[in-house]
Image 1: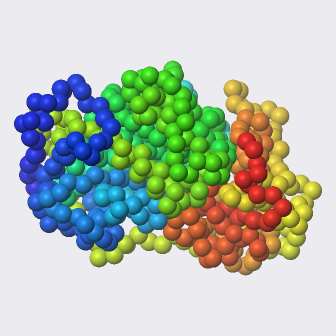
Image 2: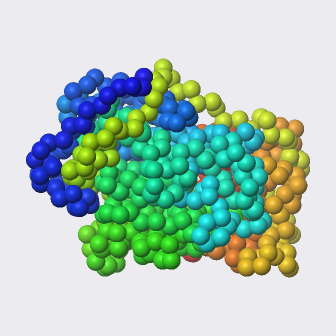
Image 3: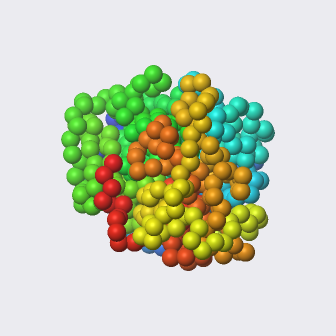
Amino acid sequence: MLRGVTLSLVVTSALAQDVDRNLRGSLPFDPATHAAGKSSGCGKSSPYTPGKTVTAKGTYAGVSLTYRVYVPKSYNQNTPLPVILQHPGWGMSASSEESGAGITGYADSLGFISVTPQGANDNTHSGGPWYSWNAAGTSQSPGAAGATCTSKASAPSYCYTSCKGCNDSPQCDWTTCDETVTPTGTGTKDVGGFIPGLYNTLESQLCIDTTREFAAGESNGGIQTYQLGVDLSSRLAAIAPQFGSFHRGFAMAPSTHVPVIDLHGTRDTTVPGNVSLSGDGYYYTTTAEIFGGGKYSKGWKRANSCTSKLTHWPTKYDGQKKFNCMSECTDGSVVRCSWNGGHDWLFGGGAANGWLVTDFLLRWTKPSHAGFGRSAGDSLQTPNVLEDVVVLAEDDTPPMSWDNLPLVMEGAHGGHYGDPDQGCLSDEEVVFAGTGRVCAPKIGTSVAGVAGEPPAPTCKLGDGNAGKSNGCPVDANVDGLHSRSRPVCVGKGNTTDPYTEGQFHCLLACPCYGHGKECGRAADWHCPHHSRCERGELRNRAHGVCTYHGTTVTPEELVV
């Protein structure tokens, strides 16, 4: 427990003298000249066992959240180490995220502390888990640009208990309203919340290099990461959002230099990088606008005082699945990466994704950060830390279960959602999904839609709980007495902007039980015979879709 503990701040007078108060930007890391900042936890015994991921809990503003900490085997309580926080996507547990993101796997060899916090789960509707982050407009629709989703995407089941009733119409809010960075999840006022409190807590417990604190995350965690880059700009040395964004009308840029690397799959229609409207009817900010600025933000290139020069940013994975990175600034502080994939970690997760994130982040340092979010020269204030911190004997995250969902699918040999290699039904088209393909029932559009909105599908959009009433076929070659798979309607086609183009199809959603990129055989069992359940298409990252992996055509052959 850390309640009532008075924390001291270690700041050398040399650091305060050498760093101008107005120069709070990040700089390239040079191990030969680097002067590490020592957090107040230096000299203390670690509460986390080195060489082992440890689960802990802490409370902020009365809300208790879980996080996982990996301290490298070589940890020395007197040697400051960098720290990287990787924020999971919507619905992802910290344990699944840690496995899939691949960052912890480099902690020993590169010498950093890896932390994976778990989002709030205060959604009582079935079909979860609903772990989430309140950031960048996810709980604030409508914003300056109007509603953050189309009328067809309105989903009351996405309203969280902490939001105390979501009254927007359409109902676009889809995450917790608990404070994870600011009270509203956007803006720059009253910065606090669970994640800043977690950084402060870690500094008080462990020997952390205060000049090398980093944020990363995927999907909803990538959205959170962008917001942290804005609100903790004087603290974070760099950020690495993976397939995240700001909702339309909520784009912001940091007040000082914060290097950023953005990763998006070219087939990601869930939180797309190059268009605003997602396949499930939500509006986001394109990466080009996040970096270059627009109506709502000056842009990250301007914040980083970039000299614009688009150049290739080389990596060891260049060319694999069309992976490519481009630097938009001469100093390499604004980098955009893409690959021939969907809404997923690089190459489906693991070592490649972890390498990309750590390779970029660890290139940077923020020498002006003296600890607890305070820059050298700032007045000393009592930092906000988590209360009631306890290290758990084991991970107490409940396993994901769809057992409370009603049976929807009707078992039928030769039904919908079949294998394209065996031929599709007359109302289906072959659609690339995840890393495979599927015969996807085609959905039409209504003639009259809401004014100012694109064509509306004749189905219920999104990964909600509409069951048999969402307008999708419910016959498939599944065990109709036990399979908990269910159809989901999305803007999906072999194009990068399917919603705007009126391309809507039904996919078969399945519970993704596995840790990391594999949903596992238990998840595959819910799908039609000879198909498998995999992530990469739905906003809730604990939900997969059923796909086939024949030899006729592969997703890598699709040019988008």
